[in-house]
Every structure is written in C-alpha cells, then in structure tokens.
Image (cartoon, rainbow, N blue to C red; front, side):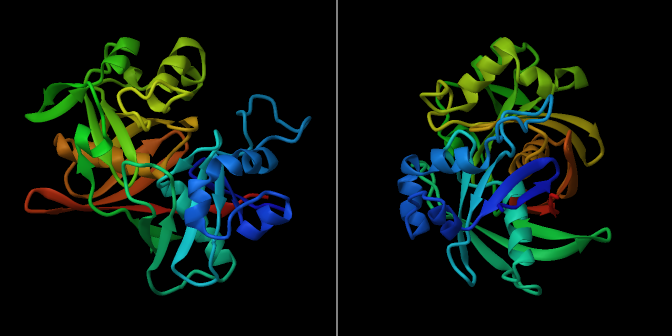
Amino acid sequence: MTPFYDARGNVYAVVAPEALRRAGIDLPEQASLAAQTRATWAPSAIEAICNWVPGTQPPGSKDHRSDGLLVGPFQSAPPFDLLIVNTDGTLAERSGNGLTIFSQALSDQGLLPADQACLLRVHHDKADTPSPGETSVKAARVEQVQGFWLDLGKPAFGPGAVSALGTDEVTLNTRVLSHVQPLSALNPAWQRSQFVRVGNPHCVTLVDEADALPANEHMRQGALSEGLTAIAYAMPTGAGRPCPAGINLQWAMRESEQRIAARVFERGEGPTASSGTSASAVACAAWRVGWVAAGEVKVVMPGGTAPILLEEVEGELSRVSLFGTARLMG
C-alpha cells in the first residue's frame, strides 16, 4: 500500500521505483533517464496512485488524493535521487514540503542519517536550470518539534533568474520589481511582483491589503482559475507567459514584524494549502523590499506556518533555509 504524508496541508504519495515497476509502469532504472522520459510513465503513475478510487472521493475534496508523487529513493544509501511528479504529469525541480515528506519517509525506513546532513538530488527535465537540483537536509528540533532543516542555497532575483519575458519595471521601497500584465489584468491590486528562484521559479506579488490575497476556493473557479492557469502553466496547458517553462505564483502581505501572510498557486498543481519553496520565495521577496530583516521569518499560509531562516552577508542574501515537519497519514 502506497504511503501518503502530510506537510502543512501538502499531501504527497511516496513510492519506491521498484513498486512502480511491479505495478507494470515502465520506469527506467536511473533517475536521470526517468526524468527525460517522464511522458512515457508519469501520467500512468499519477493515475494509478494519486487519482481517487471511483466512489471514494469525499464531498468537497480536490481532484486528486494528493498534490503529487515522490518517486524514490533510487539508492539504498545517500546521496538519494528522486523525482517530484505534479498531478498533471510534469516534473518539479524542487518542493520544500515534498522534500520534507521525502526526508520523513527516508527516516521511517531507517535510511536517513540521524546526526549529519544528507543530500537529496531531484531530477527533472527543465531546460533553464541544471538537473539534478541538490538540497541538503538535516534532522533537527525547533521549539520542541522534531523535523528537518532544508538548505535551499542562495536565491536569485529578477526576470533573468526565471527566464521571464515581456515584463515592465516598477519600484517598491527603491527596489526594482516587475509588473506582470496578465496578473494585474486579473486584479488591479496585483501590480508589483518579485521573481525569485530557489531551485524552482517563483513570482511573488506584493500586496498591501488582506483582501488582495486570493482565496484558494476562488482560485479554483471560473475566470480567475483560467487566468492563473494560463500564467502559471507552460504550454499546452497554459500560455507560458511570462515564463515559457511556467512559474509558481504567490501573493504576500506584511502581517507584522518578521511575519508574512501568503497564498500559493503552483505550476502543475494549482492552488495549494501551503508550499515550502513558495514560503521561502515569499520570505526572500519580503526581505528584498525591506518588509523583513535577515533571521527567522514566519510565512503564514492556509495550511500552516513555515519557519524560514534568511542569512545575509554584505547586504545580500547568502542562504535561505526551510524548517518542516511531516506526518504519515492513516
């Protein structure tokens, strides 16, 4: 039976490569080759594991049992290779909550080192960033809660970091940001966005009022759903504008000192209760416009609050780290 884990409202199934092969899914032996051939096996894996069994979908639930599928590990000892499969069959370069869940699954299997960092290597098929993307993870306790710190490395800012095209420049607190016309066409309050790459690409739209933060239920409906899908998803599902490879969307509002409220619409998935890399991108964008200082930042999403650690050297962010916990679902 495939285990499902929850991390701040994000749910992923974790499945070993050999389990997919036993189910008749033609998954290559190497993660690198599996990434390049994902169209031949990923949709079947999502259908077999993440789709609801007919007649079992609870009222009001989303379209899939989980937010995606984590395939791995491909080794019995670190470093560990894995694939992060979105429910539309595409691959993600990184997922903070997904890697937290994968770390917990490794720990449950007795594979994760208890007292030292472990390297996770996510393979993907995106052309605009190297594969595999590497993340160092280490077990830790924060405020008496057992979990994992994920070292997401140094963030990059601006349209060039995410291969964005056709955006205009705007400013906030002397920082040059981007005006993404398809976003502001959906809501005039969405005028100022910060592109951030933390292994995967993000567009953080900075707003002043809580009512400019879109509700997840609204992002699943009508013209707003269609408009956000066109922006976030690559072709053919979306328009790939402004980013041909697609972009994860967030909205952020300064709630109080070192605390940011956020909403998330993920490329390949849609609105989600939370996202670890999205929370990290939100914290980085908030730092860049002076809303928060380096140190611990809390990003509040519908699924829970993500502690983010920002490290600054000579006026630049040198590292962003995410703390997360996950639980095996019954």
